[in-house]
Length: 375
Image (cartoon, rainbow, N blue to C red; front, top):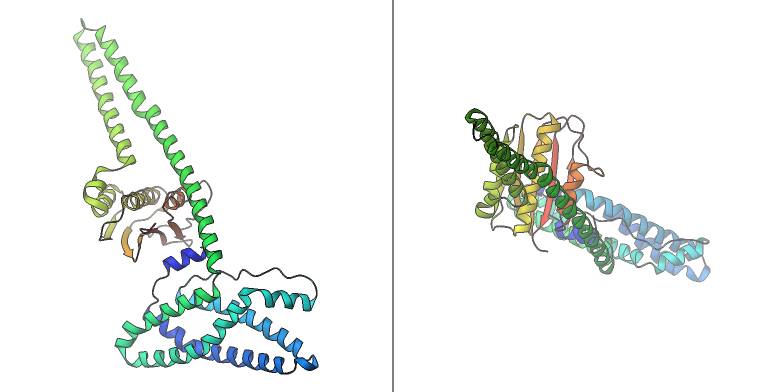
């Protein structure tokens, strides 16, 4: 996930997660602060006798290492996706590598965060300890403070703003390309269904009616041919109706996601619980994408999972509609090139959405789509 996508999708941590982060972080912050300040002060003071150079080299190395540690720690503890550091390449001898580190903006952003983290950590530690005793603080204040800390970490430890913008632009370009491929695949599917399904049925109807004309003097044969033509005509109408529903279902346009997904669930051979809370109504493109993701996933569950129960939950999280489909089947589902889940990812990518799959062997399987409504 790019830095831009991470910033957009960062959610508030739970109270328990935020309290654990605030209380557990202080010892780490203290060690980092004392080591870095001591080494930098001693290194600068002893530069005149050259001893300061290796000390400052060690301080720089520690700052970068602590920065990498903080990226992993904040990502895990606060559920804030911070990409790995994008650092300048190092080559040459020790002094040349050190000079590269000093000219790397990421090094100074690491150091800035680490120096700020200690005084902030003292405040957060006190707040976290109070929150253990005072429940209202734990419920209302601590998650917000944890969210703000995640934003600060993302701003200082994540890629620079310009690089985040470049990464987002590249991701959007790739998403649009995948969307074009998905649309082309959908067009070919419609053509194939028309040619192999409804068109063949209508040809059969025409042939049956042509034969019926030659049997006008034979009532029994005529009735049989007319019955055959009638059956083919009804099947052609049904196939055309299914095809039209696959392009854009009328129930979705008229009654929204709740009714459309409930209708899909009612047709599934596997029992499905449906919960939809998306007010205000999302844009049509988001609704359509969510509808097809759920439909394809339920089809896969019925065919391949061995599940006896499934659930569909759709809700809003800020400017994002989240679609989550869960089943108690055999597990083992994954995104792979040419697979059905990759097709869902391509469809989601047309609106800058993201598909994630958690499916350990033995299940359960959770397929989640984050579909932004703010593009």
